[in-house]
Length: 183
Image (cartoon, rainbow, N blue to C red; front, side, top):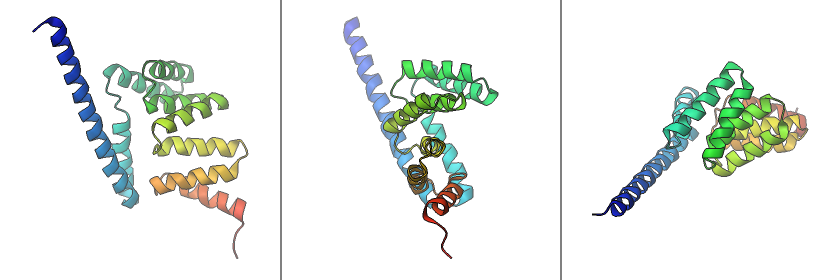
């Protein structure tokens, strides 16, 4: 076997392995989302954590490290460093929704609403069930004076994650504000 054939065989094997892992992860996520829809509040928190764990796996140790560094920087309040890490992640892996979601959060916290909205939209293009990105999008819509759109997005979050923190309260508050309170 030539070196070129060996490289091609290795590449094909690696690609098939990655595809198998992605399919298994997708099946795991589908089951977790089904479980989340039926879960008690206590179970929902555990399932949400499992979903976040799967979402945080890009398939590349280097990209996962950039994600962790960005998240750590956010937690430490170092928004500039978070933006650097998330931007590097987005540049190197533009198909990884968590990079956009993290950067959207960093942009939002730095007061850059336009870039935050664009990144949250990209995160949702890549992962339409991302209840965290949806919640962030609804928060931004509220701040932009679009309560009706925010209410619709919050309701989408609840359809995916009935026990999402603070979302039920936001729906109730906006429904009263927009639709009035029945006597």
